[in-house]
Image (cartoon, rainbow, N blue to C red; front, side):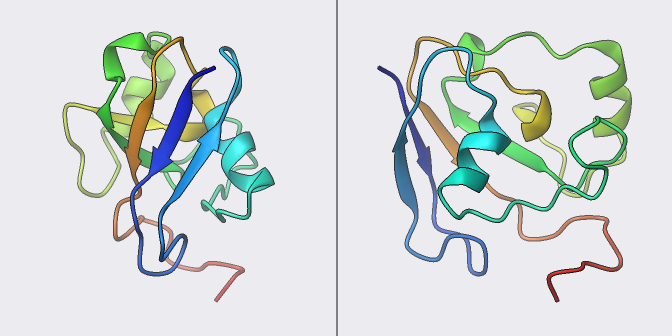
Amino acid sequence: MPKVVFLPHETHCPEGMVIDVNPGDNLIEVALEQGIDIEHACEMSCACTTCHVVVREGFDSLNEADELEEDMLDKAWGLEPESRLSCQIEVGDEDLVVELPKYTINIVSESH
């Protein structure tokens, strides 16, 4: 059973967290279930970049990003080669280490 390690994030996950997941699980859904409040302004429909994450380890085990996700990622703050939208990530067979960026392009957040 793979694990997802969320690195500490000042507001969303101050202590960091390790979550057991199943291959095929959606990353943002498992994070939300565990209380990691990743922003998702478009309700996880791949229409914004507020759920942007950087996959520090295990990136190659993920499903491929489609053209729509890649187009959306071009608008993300702090884009890196290992960036993905967490609403589009299906966990593979390997453990993941995930970093939540410090900022999003979301000007207004309902949680603030």
